[in-house]
Image 1 (cartoon, helix red, strand yellow):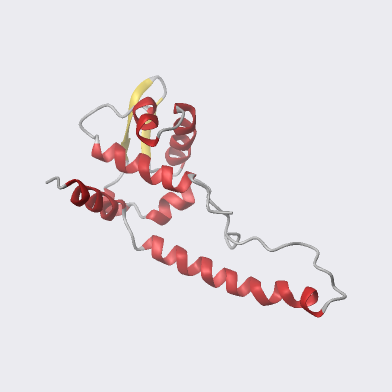
Image 2 (cartoon, rainbow, N blue to C red):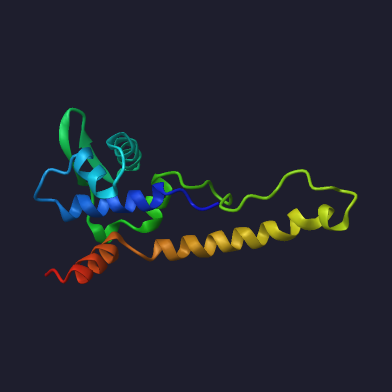
Length: 144
């Protein structure tokens, strides 16, 4: 199991909207870059709009960011596309055998470890902005 690809696609969408800010960034344009169906892009754009990260208008092609790249963190995107709920990144199997010492104690033992790991990951995401992502892309393309 892995984190939903919605997270990576959300980052892709937001970065491409800014990268193409002088053009029209339609769902079809975004879908061609992500290599997916425009309906998938429109669904994610709805989530990003609901989170206040983009502005879109029904029936009008195009989208734009509502704030600067430096003000949008990867954590914002992570939360916007509903990757996971609080303290639910790691699933724990239900109903272990309570007659077994490990079964009786495993959940209480690993739940705090999993919560700490998720917190650490989220802390990293809070410290990386879309501006950082864009700068890496620009550097990789030798643009600017």
